[in-house]
Amino acid sequence: MNEQQSIRVYEHADELYRMAATFVAEQIRSAIDNRGQALIALSGGSLTSRLYPLLANAPLREQIDWSRVSIVFADERYVPFDDSENNYRATRQTFLDHVPVHADQVFPVPTYYRDPQQAATIYQQQLTALLTAHGGQIDVALLGMGPDGHTASLFPRHPVLTAIPAGALTVVVADAPKPPPLRLSLTPAALNTARAVVFVVSGADKAAAVAAALADTGDAMAQPTRLINPVAGTVYWMLDRAAAERVMQ
Ligand code: 6PG
Image (cartoon, rainbow, N blue to C red; front, side):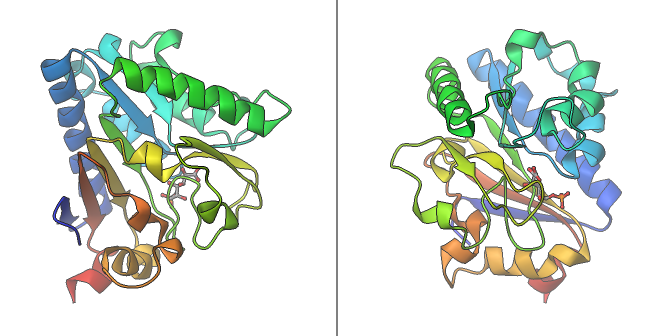
């Protein structure tokens, strides 16, 4: 575990998501208080149903000046916006349609391009402009982790991990083991601009991957979360006891 990393364990998943939402809201408020704005990167998966509704409802909703928040996506399934698998769609349904953000504050991955590489190039340009406007950093990158240890759409031992061009902030991921197979992900370099990377992980099915991720040994390519080491930021692991079971021993 590196020095810029903290682990918090909560007895049950409900408490985990409540505390994680509260922590993320604090991080967003701090960014706005200190720099007048916040840039956040959102993941999909269970965060869309378990955590985002907490940000979209009282008391947290009223604690944030949403007009100062810009939102990008840590990854996206390369499907249309109206596809039930699309993270942007799910995040709108549980979060973004329920807080006062304007469309120009939200940057969905443009999955309407036939060529995903063109979308990746365009998203890189958008993220580069946002980073320039936000002091070079994402304020909060909110990430989950799969049972295999993947995060965003960075999958263990996936060929793309060793083929990401230097400086690339986005990457097309084909043949992802978690369906849908075609995705677009922020790269470790993009995520490592974060001031706060917050992994929110619950469930016994994640326990082995959490233990492997937090161990300082082994091949980082087998544990993509270990590629996430913010240049000037902190990694926060927020876990329920079931996910932390193998770490607590
Ligand atoms: C995605 C997510 C993905 C997710 C993990 C964990 O698009 O699938 O961004 O990275 O965070 O797969 O998902 P669960 O929390 O649902 O297990």
